[in-house]
Length: 215
Image (cartoon, rainbow, N blue to C red; front, side, top):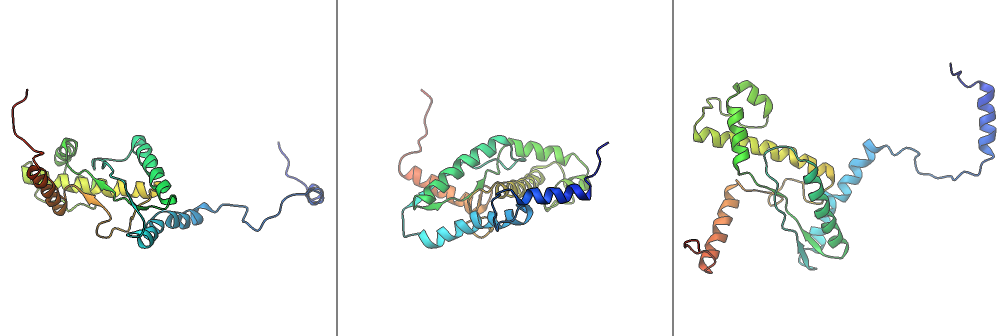
């Protein structure tokens, strides 16, 4: 059994401690991470991005990072983490080199995996689906028809986007996470789809789109 230190031992310890030439500092001995981390996070992520947008846009050369968006069909994994960290290093390096950094996070909201998940959830009771996706506008009379599948796929994608966004913010990815207009893009947004049609129209006009047989 270990005995607690006696009062005499504590006094001796204090005497010995005073004989040591230990460094002294005004910094707190404990990091107090629960308080300090949110402060540092805000200063080095959203506030930093907003500051460089205000001070450098149109003044210095702009570095564009065109990022392949993740699929909005589940949680992020280690591969996403590696991808985001490497790209964030590039953005921050360019920022330190004096560039204005333009980076808009986005999500690919289309694809068979999302539809398959939607079909799986549509076979569950409605109350369980609402529990799984609380932020979705779930249709009460949900049936296995194309319109309902689209509605549920959209709700599933939106929940995945919000979940992944929280993770990316927690990872400290440099971007504007305020949620304002132009701070993100979703491939299922009507304005994004219209812009894609405009790009395709330009490609057709420039002769980049052709119809023919395989060789």
